Image 1 (cartoon, rainbow, N blue to C red):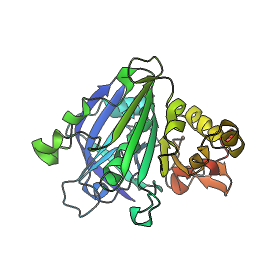
Image 2 (cartoon, rainbow, N blue to C red):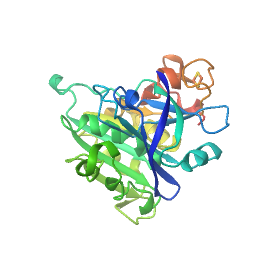
Image 3 (cartoon, protein in one colour):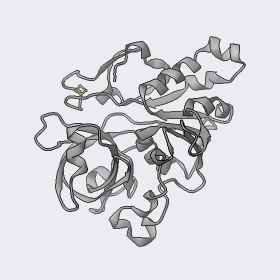
Length: 292
Ligand code: FES
């Protein structure tokens, strides 16, 4: 974990109220793992705001001095509004990388070849970095659910790559080649009509590991699906969903385990989302007690 004064490389509104910001921060880019997050000091606000890392370039390796990370964030309050107004060349104060991210079983063990990723809305943010890491060795299906088509992961993003990567890289899609993309919208304006969790069970027999990031309601629906009694009653293979990693987004104070402001109750006892997570096993969390 390091505190860095970093430079904004680009900041573009890629969907309504959703910004993609590339930030030059070599020592975070070379060390961040999928599912980890950073905190940003937003103007004069006392509390730093947490953001999952959306992309990194280059991926983990040597600090070339040129590394960048991307944040994909929604403007939801004064802190994110401040961040959305930052211009290219401005400096921002970042702390990270923080927390425990996703774990991927090696393909050698034969346990994890097919990865199913489930995103609800802006929950797509950390799953793109996970795809960047895993796509060379795993087959990936991504279900992205949103309220309407213009909230789905946009085709505009491929044109806004990291500056250091040059023209060729900037044209690449942030969804790695070979990823099967399944859009779902509540109003049916693109892809299947409904919620991501409506079609999730169709892929469980295929998936070796499941990863999810989205709103609390999505997790609650998934937690219900993972109950053995329900799975048997419905004749589904939902027991696989019990081995699902979810990324929690909760209000944070310090971001590194000092204030206990992000404590949740789990089957393993009290845990701090910022230090023990933000990634947890779906069936470890006592969902009735989670407040986001
Ligand atoms: Fe302070 Fe997690 S935010 S302990």
